[in-house]
Amino acid sequence: MSDPSAAATQESGAHPADGAASDDAVCAQLLEGVSRTFALTIPQLPAVLAPVVANAYLLCRIQDTIEDEPTLDVASKRLLCAHFAAVLGGQSDPISLRDALLPRLSDRTSPAERKLAQELPRVIGQLRRFSPLQQQAITLCVTRMGEGMAEFQQHASASGLDDQAAMDRYCYFVAGVVGEMLTALFCDYSAGIARNKELLMRLSVSFGQGLQMTNILKDLWEDLGRGACWLPRTVFTGHGFDLDQLRGAQHDPAFQRGLLQLLALAHGHLSNALRYTLLIPARETGIRNFCLWAILMALLTLRRIQARPQFESAAEVKISRSAVRAVIASSRLSARFDALTELLFQYASRGLPAPRLT
Image 1 (cartoon, helix red, strand yellow):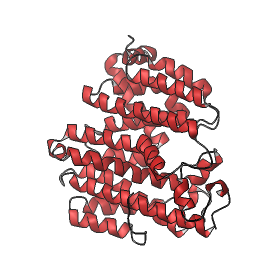
Image 2: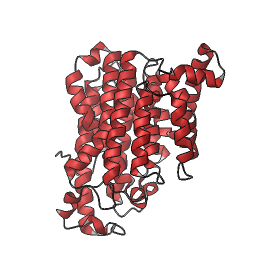
Image 3: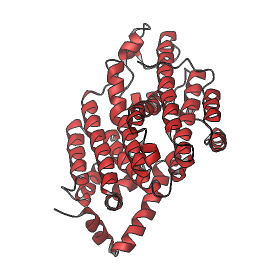
Image 4: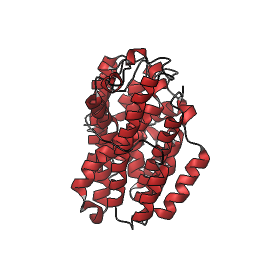
């Protein structure tokens, strides 16, 4: 069996110790390129956790790159996801996956994502230096994500998912598994956090779904442009709207009623995300801030969608940099105090439809 870490080091010509430092630096640069938000939030985590979570995010982003590449057919995506799983499990080397993936990426893949694919051996090299439990948690998450994405890609269409249960299942594979992974990493890091592991695990799936539903609603027109829609058909038919008529439907009152129902569901999941955050001991302000920033930015995005249901692109409902700065400042002030954190959540969610869950 090949050693992916050794292969990456050999290819770069670095000594192992130098390779570790180099891999860490490259991975930090890659994170900046593919996600300004996570490049901002992940450094808030404890120093021993930040590189682990950053690595996990980069691996998930590679999985996303495979899913989002429009020139790949479903069979090719399945093969690449299986190859990725083999690399994560140590049955294949990362260079072979890089060489299989890079030529298949079109100009629809961003330069930052292409760079990430190019540096895949370094990302895997960094993964191999984490503890066995950390590697296991990350590998399980990314592998499950790939299996789920392959399943849904086979049935992806512009007509939406069948029902809310299908949307819930999709959100689990692309975000709920991330919540479970983070919870495993947090509990491994802190015995105080681990005392609530069972409840945190349950809430983590809902936390992930709240964030993913926010992204689905924000990006729905861009997704439609790629021929995909992740909205549940039955929610909209219940309001008298057919998702087959989605293009140009922004001003249709029936469509807007369905959108409002999904906003309430997302709000409900983000309420569970708040419960999750408050189960983290108050002294762990870095982890609390990591969670709170994501929750608050999602709430502000939902409010922008509600205020402009006729929006035609994600750019129209993206929160401003000043709003991001306000989230950071207010969270830092309140994170140690449960009552203040709850008040901040209520303030950020004001005007949204009452939270509900299925």
